[in-house]
Image (cartoon, rainbow, N blue to C red; front, side, top):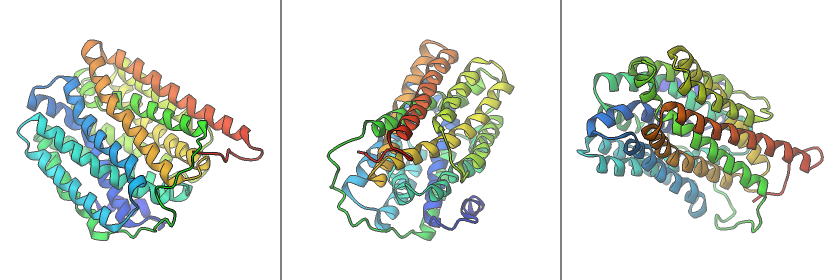
Length: 379
């Protein structure tokens, strides 16, 4: 895991190594879900709707801490250490559970820790486009190595082996505990007003994550059952998805109309679920990675530019996207159960396209609302 960390900070040096490591581990946990879901279904004899709760419970915990952390506390070394230890413990416990109920509890606790770590990282860089790029690029770089390893573990063992590995590597961020600057302004202070355009961006991000997760969390199942792609091969496709996101997430220039890239993710989702072709399906997943990481940092930069309290909006955006990811897998599993992967793709892909176009529209409206720049009034 050291190579991705060094690659992520090479030539930048603006984000603490401990935070980079924590984001990489968090990415590994989230990246594992689509690949282990088939194993979970077979181990506990579940339907697709019930299996979606594995991701949903993890994201419920993520939402709670992403939304509340910036409102009740400030970043600190103690919170960082606590989050790392809780995440490692939750992953170890998830590997040993005898039934689905305890697995859901374990994923909820893991989600609490993941939300804290993500908030700590993004709140430290939100509003600084260069440093945001340093954090954003970690996800795809980590995914390049994580997906093949998870795929091999699932193919030759089960989801339990994956969680054991995550529990072990999850302690690596403790090797370099980061320092955190304290915000002199009390966290309880809030602006009483609110800009509709900022709320619109956050809502659109929730739609994007809803549609994307509805398809992506079941991508391993769809690839194996409908496209004839084995877990091992599909793990390489997911690795290519992550690799495709490296140049787009590390892009240091402007990202005008970032929402259009997110709308492209919707097109990729529709192709993946309706083409019936292993080649087209794999290609769409790879392009999805490039589109997503080109769009999300741009949407975050837009939200930061129209926000008076960027650090708080970082938590709000993360929480909103996590809410979308909670309901996405549940609805996606239901659509698979009562319809088909094509039905899932058309519904979820349509929501992705709508959310992306909404963000692009918000950017245009924001640019027009103030001469020579974007809006200043914010929530």
